Image (cartoon, rainbow, N blue to C red; front, side, top):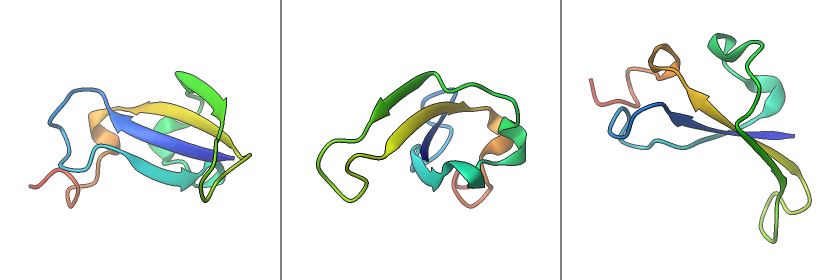
Length: 67
């Protein structure tokens, strides 16, 4: 399982998408359900289950949001 994460608001991070294995979800997402779920098409995660989560601002590392 993989998790695709994105910020709640545009511009909160220079690189708004983060790919991580689902067991590596940030603690700030504990208990949060993904907003979307699908099976990956061709590519390096082909056939894997993908979940899309919305990142609350406190989840975004300082190094990612340019501050």
